[in-house]
Amino acid sequence: MEALKQGSDVLFILLGGIMVLAMHAGFAFLELGTVRKKNQVNALVKILTDFSVSTVMYFVVGYTVAYGTSFFVGAEQLAARNGYDLVKFFFLLTFAAAIPAIISGGIAERARFGPQLFATAALVGFVYPFFEGIAWNQAYGVQGWIKSLTGQEFHDFAGSVVVHAMGGWLALPAVILLGARSNRYRKDGAVSAHPPSNIPFLALGAWILTVGWFGFNVMSAQTIDKISGLVAVNSLMAMVGGTLAALAVGRNDPGFVHNGPLAGLVAICAGSDLVHPLGALAIGAIAGGMFVVMFTLTQNKWKIDDVLGVWPLHGLCGAWGGIAAGIFGAKAFGGLGGVSLGAQVIGTAMGVGWALLAGFVVYGILKKVSTLRLTPEEEYEGADVSIHRIGSTPEREANW
View 1 (cartoon, rainbow, N blue to C red):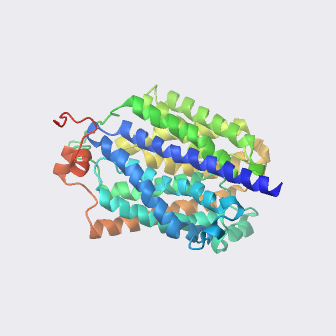
View 2: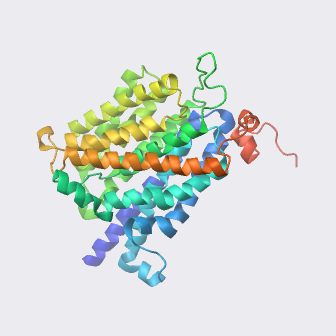
View 3: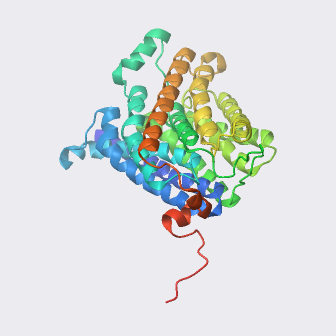
């Protein structure tokens, strides 16, 4: 029976890893459908290469920083318990690799390729796993300190703060240091609109992310005996709430409608194992409306050129999700209890603060020692031709 349990756990978490791996295709197509045609190839290449760099860095150093487990041992030891530790690494790697995938959407269309790969290595190797270890592995005694203050530990079941808020708040300094795309904000105060280049691809990316998210959330149980249908239905309700709120607040705009479910799913990650489905619906609806309002303010009023709106989508909705778990997870709101609003506020603030500081340090250093941004000529040509020397639909075919 123990062998069967071990094998089932390995299969369970492996399937979760595969589902979250598929979400990276969603990141790719969401970005591809949003950026202009001359930057579509770059969007696809960035997601794949960022994932590859993330894999190496998380395997070599990041997983050790977070969990103290090193893979520099014999294969016989690694294969123990049906290789559960290896597939757990695979599953958590797909979370870690979401950090550069999130940032990629914010800095699209004007960032150089090489410096971003260096940033990916630093963020996935050191910055992200440092906070991951605090939240999910009791590292440095921080969770004990929070519990001594509030009576409960900081709770983030599937990463509203650990993954999404971290990614969004890391992206904000990168976007600010890079500056806006050329001619995005003119000297006369006018805002030059860059509408999505391909709504069907944007929608495809959103759907792939939405489907994969059920692996992201449900398989965060990590063993089959802890699986909960509550997590699945709460994810569903938050997705629906985010969609309907974005539809209403965004006045039928398809870009907002397809980002609405993602906003809801970002927000529900933290408390998906605690809240009532109606609470999940409310969490998702608030997140969907928040995304539309804050995306509009960011782009048009504050003139922060965050191309895919990753700061409002992941940064703000992720932070809301961390706090919302402390509200709707309480028994007074139909939740399971065992969570403290104070602990959620402290943990969320720590994650946001660490990401913001690390983002300015990493991208600030890169800006000092390298060139973060494409030249005006390269940006005008587009990242596809400037970096990869081919467009998404080449007009000339080779003659054989």
